Length: 498
Image 1 (cartoon, rainbow, N blue to C red):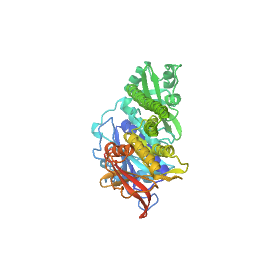
Image 2 (cartoon, one colour):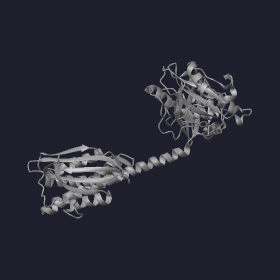
Image 3 (cartoon, rainbow, N blue to C red):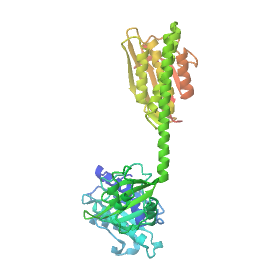
């Protein structure tokens, strides 16, 4: 939601909470809603301009606004009503307008905050379907007016109302609605609400009964109860809760109704979410299984590493022992990736912590001198999990190679630099590994041919070109145009195809 003029953080947050929850009002009123924000700062000479910043259509009736009005100004017949509600802070009904034909079916409600208007809500009712309303329709519209009146008094939505980001189980009006008085006694229950409660085993007459006592009597006292449930069932405070009974799950939401600061009733919306919860539990089980698989793979790889370590100790040949130690280090690298992935269920991983740890360990393990230091600059950022293993192996091999061939006997520095850039061809990840060792200019080529060098460099080249789809180059180390002792390995990996 974009506002035409700057507002205070508190004002913007109040309007965002309003539009987050106002689908309930549209459904209760069988009407479209539009939120109008001033196009000029309060107190300026121009107080006549308004821009539509949000719009809601009802699920319970046909829309009257087939065109999206967000970003537009109010039409000629509506503009004076919006101005009147803004200037007076009072509701403007169609019957109050001298020429009702120009705006028939539109009610205008000011949105107050701290006693001052901050926006205006217009309620557009479809008059082509007007008929004698049923009891359900009459109570729905009465409830919509009660909530709109709280908006005009600045008491809804409540600041402490729980508005989660994920609202997949958030009840809507059509799922079931119960209206209660100040004592928690049911005055009306929609047919869907009655059906939902009957699935819990509650078959008694609801009207005239206290919903909280009725529902809690059916609860299994041996099972834990949602701590918010009593307050939600009584309508004492705004909030959400759930009931799980006889393999049936209900999601509930309470909306206290207040007039002049006093609570006179409440609305409770409820929805059966049994199948949704069952699917959610299955997904949670799959996530747990995936984490357990990563954990077991990590343990198995550590066992393999331990076996290689034991075997290397029995080798008399230094070359064979070194080969087993390198294999062991590669196995440990893959184990570290699986250990990291066992703590998350996300497809993308924050690579900085993983690769920084791997780089530092690789330098420490490969270094025989105590003064070899590892330095890391920049950030890898968040990358797909499929890149974790090849990247970690590449960093391990390059760091090991840099320590063995690019540091002096007394120590040195191995640097790793990571950055991301975007150009016309997409987004790219750039990795540079620098060492301080001597450079043989005769052997230095801009692009190292595939298969050149030892096994470690062959592994790096294969992983970069095949697994990551990138490019790897070797260059003499330089800084500010001056050539320095050492080598730079530059890797460029495309991210736009992932």
